Image 1 (cartoon, rainbow, N blue to C red):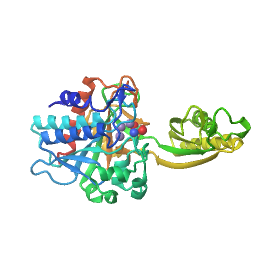
Image 2: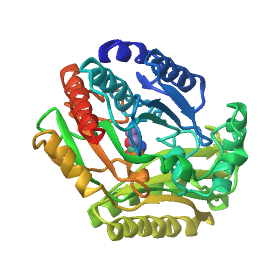
Image 3: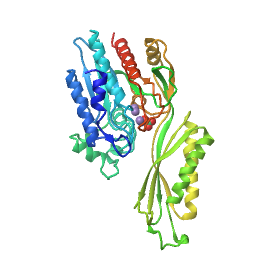
Image 4: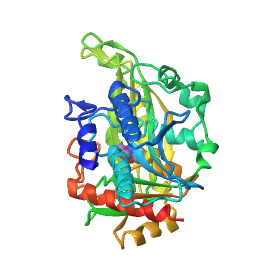
Length: 398
Ligand code: HGY
Ligand code: MN
Ligand code: MN
Ligand code: MN
């Protein structure tokens, strides 16, 4: 079952007719189908699947005689709403295909190799990106994680319990991390900078998401005089515009892509609005200034309308500089491919706090990601598999 057959099997799972993209939210039926696909591919290869306490899965290849810290690869299977086909799954399918290549060549790794599928990388269901790898590395409080809720008000603890996991068992897993020597994540490029089929990541720029809650007063849209309104939509609108202005002023990027309106009725003045800001930039200070500017603008816009504003939640990742030795080793193995930073967050960025990590990128000719137009040509995907196989061969040789 080579790359193209695996890809054809996975591709139909989780399609979202409404957007033409994918909707594979963690532990919803489409993502559970992807998890079942993962277990099938592992079983087909005689790999043991480990389910850690945090909902992450790792398929282990332990050739006879292999010992010592493992080389971990893989990525994630979940998606953003309306996401593309490649963000996450390309890294998982390529990992299985790279193992096939090594086996076909008779390569016998002297270290174990793991294929990971990290849980809730996009944070699309519970609002915190890389939730599974954050829990694994101890970079989110398990109690905070258990209390996270999805759009239907279901808690992460509920969903874990329903998935057969113990919500009280989530948290850092040093035992697992101690078995990992390094992590190499292959990922579709999220941009259009790559001149060749494959590149190596130099860094992940600082990025984060901030939740703003606006509290006003619900009322009738038709019978309430303007002077009697406390409409939270107005300062929310101010926040959206301020995000773009603050980004231009601070040399960053900022987006408000998600909003929740209560009660969300055409003829009802909202009682509450929640908006999520995503801000990213070249350095911590620029991102922090952007968020501070948006916060100030939201409060200034709220005051005249008697609306309360709270910057209620933050999940932020400072700059991730990948392990230089590992990065240079990959670049050498691949014969001097381009090395470039990324503005996208990844599990590799979270794991880099605990194990040496590196990333490979596969060219995306559209440059689009987190949308249906995300793409990688098959030839480039196969070049990515070959590159990953070469990297795994090198890293497991001794
Ligand atoms: O949001 C991100 O940057 C990543 O694609 N999860
Ligand atoms: Mn993504
Ligand atoms: Mn991703
Ligand atoms: Mn990722």
